[in-house]
Amino acid sequence: MEDRPVGEENLRTLINPDSDVLTGLAAMHHAELPASRVSRLGLPYTTEFYRFGASSCDESVIAVLADDGPAVGGAFVSFNPAGLTSRLARHTRLIGALIRNPVLAGTLLTYEFISLGKRDELNPENDPELLAVFVSADWRGRGIGQVLLRAVEAATRERKLSRYIIRTEDAPTNRAISFYQREGFETQRTVNVCGLPFRIMMKHL
Picture 1 (cartoon, rainbow, N blue to C red):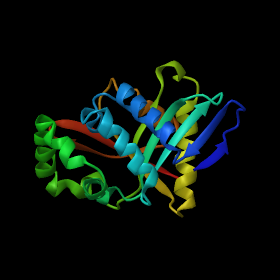
Picture 2 (cartoon, rainbow, N blue to C red):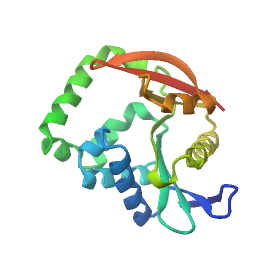
Picture 3 (tube, rainbow, N blue to C red):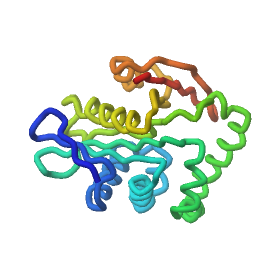
């Protein structure tokens, strides 16, 4: 676990925090990102997902805490996203969670089949990918997202990597696009997966 000041006395970041903080992050992910695939597998699996990320050599979990209280924001980044699904299958109960959710399992299998020929469109260089970033509803608009990105970027630089990507829905109502643009991300491409358009954005460090 790593503790870093972030410029305000009442805020701090934790890299790969302890179990209690990870449990809180999983609950926040589940509440703030209910449509994500991880959330749809249920809160127990979301908790397992975050515990895996904090223990993995290829992933990092980042939490922002305020006033020594619970986490107010979190992020999950993979530095080897091409192998993430296979690592999850080996080290978490992903298969069991999918069996308990056959509708989602069918959607994921369809996604895998359709995207077989499109891997290069999604992330041709296997760049680090910020897979989730979220802020508690009570703390939105207070700079927590920027704090999380700075921590992700510090972790990326520590690995001698110079860029990372995010994937976000390409829709006019998606306010995340303008946030990422303000933070220096540039659109690399748009892709259509299972009928949904996604924008791949990259930031050079």
